Length: 80
Image (tube, rainbow, N blue to C red):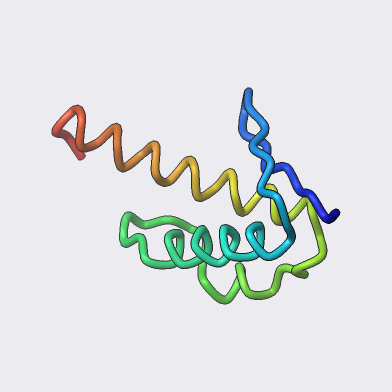
């Protein structure tokens, strides 16, 4: 079938299908776009990425993971 792995720094997660990967991509895009922490990535920039470009999808996914890690760090340390 159409199996895609989303890779982080040390782990690959099989998503099972292209549809699941697309949902994850959409969620990651929405999460990044909703951040008000001065992130330099803009929603219009995310929308310009070709849906079939796996390298750019991987970059988007990693950006979403970094944003979530940043939020967890600030919540854990109580500083911002």
